[in-house]
Length: 236
Ligand SMILES: *[C@@H]1O[C@H](CO)[C@@H](O)[C@H](O)[C@H]1NC(C)=O
Ligand SMILES: *[C@@H]1O[C@H](CO)[C@@H](O)[C@H](O)[C@H]1NC(C)=O
Ligand SMILES: *[C@@H]1O[C@H](CO)[C@@H](O)[C@H](O)[C@H]1NC(C)=O
Ligand SMILES: *[C@@H]1O[C@H](CO)[C@@H](O)[C@H](O)[C@H]1NC(C)=O
Ligand SMILES: *[C@@H]1O[C@H](CO)[C@@H](O)[C@H](O)[C@H]1NC(C)=O
Image 1 (cartoon, rainbow, N blue to C red):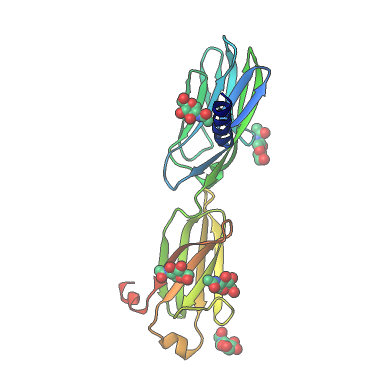
Image 2 (cartoon, rainbow, N blue to C red):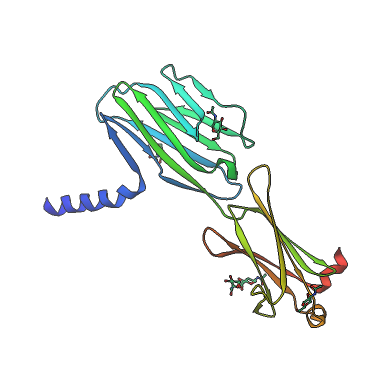
């Protein structure tokens, strides 16, 4: 039985980091501590209440984001949902002590920490879920301007740096004049535009494409890139 106990403990320890468990009085609240939201995909946040004792009766349960209550349920199982504020629609469901928020898609303004709160006949509990958003959910536009190549990254989150490469040389080291403009759209996505001012004739006359790459400020990785080609100009 010692072997079995060890095995069970191993299984328990293995499972433990997956969930955060709160035991206050005798009510448990289970949430996923962290959720990664992929571009354009639905995201579900579950808050599961249970009690080791019989007869758990939920008096109030709520999901909130910042200081805003998004969805709550009372002892009559009546759901109250926040209607305004969010651009992206979300659903609110309650079943068997489980309150779920389902977003059709996540926007930057909706990422971050969510709180689930419970009041019941067995006590109270609070747990948190952090929703992390994919760093780039858009497209890259490449344009060749008269004074040099230009590129625009849409739907960047939270931030990034643009580096240019030419003929396998990193030209963002100051050898070429680089300009960058950043703005935030109404959903919280960052739009980053970068362009080079080619001064020398050798640079201008080169037929090798320019590689415009976006490096995420969060992960430090290159997350998107495009080539700006000379012959693409005829398409404009
Ligand atoms: C909550 O319960 C549902 C249904 O049993 C389950 O699919 C989900 O994984 C649970 N979530 C957590 C965080 O325990
Ligand atoms: C919620 O927080 C925001 C920003 O911190 C603030 O502008 C707003 O007034 C707050 N709303 C309530 C209802 O407290
Ligand atoms: C390119 O140069 C920039 C600026 O010096 C630097 O931050 C970046 O890490 C370089 N990237 C690569 C892949 O060498
Ligand atoms: C062209 O490049 C030279 C040296 O690289 C610099 O001194 C000059 O200011 C540049 N001219 C313009 C218009 O950017
Ligand atoms: C551009 O350069 C980056 C960094 O060297 C590389 O990761 C990426 O694949 C290149 N992109 C294209 C479209 O060639």
